[in-house]
Figure (cartoon, rainbow, N blue to C red):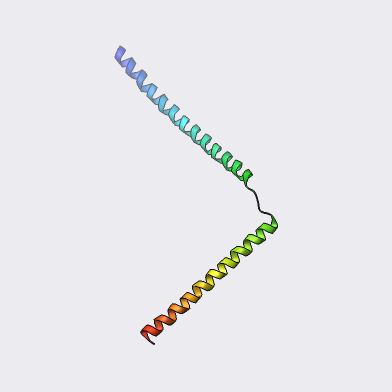
Length: 90
């Protein structure tokens, strides 16, 4: 009989342990999500937003660069097209 009661105690201990373990996992998950969100907020506080003048300057530089690359690719495309027509004839 002593062995049976010991087996019962172990069985109930395992159930309680798994329930405790599940609760612990959920708690750790919520803490991890909370930590993640707080770190996001901390990082967003460090962001330096550009002034209006900087924003207009950066935007202008990007637009000029994109237009220059478009012209370069267009000239190459036109040149290769003419070269292919000259080689293979039409």
